Length: 268
Image (tube, rainbow, N blue to C red; front, side):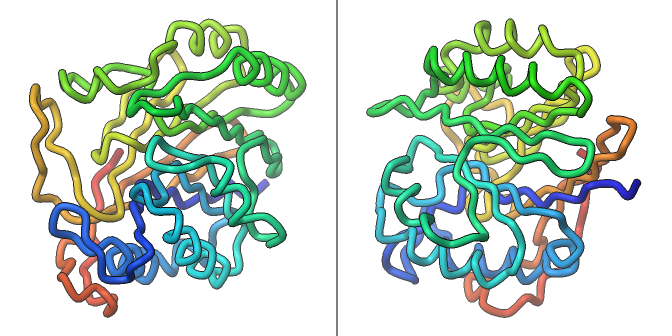
């Protein structure tokens, strides 16, 4: 059986205005540069995984997201972040067959679970009792598959004081459920605008950089990292193994409409 290939895109922070910027980075041109750079991987991918903060508190940006990703001709698995309005995001994607909002998706021998961790009015996240029950159920129904669990907020410490104050508030409840299901092989998230890879038992823990601006790792106070936009490639094999890397656009320019960036990857 061929491995499953995914491309994770996260924290695009789009606005209704095409040239609008977040901390000096024009977010829509940056996203376009990332997608152009990732085009060979997207062409080979079974699905794209988009893990939240699609807009920067501006629902007019959902139009750009829908138009941009619909043109890629791949399934797009989407969950919301704290800068999103989940109901408006769902509505914006409704009716187009490429998009799936939350829920789960079975691809070959894997189940990909998409969680909504948005806590209204807060930068932190929380999984509702209903979401936790659903997670337990959908994992329990697929013991013959490997599972990849996806959410926006980080469920483990990032060793960054300010970031860890806005992570998943009920991570202990989350892991109590995950630990009941030995076929969970990986947990991936956005939110933190940086790359991290760790293991928790046999589970890969993975965070992914933003398609726009990055946050400085292991910083006690908020700080920007000068690293460029990035994305993650995941390969899920039939035995439950996960091979992954983060790709950075080292030559990203402010005028990002041209995919002139060089590829630079780090094992992640």
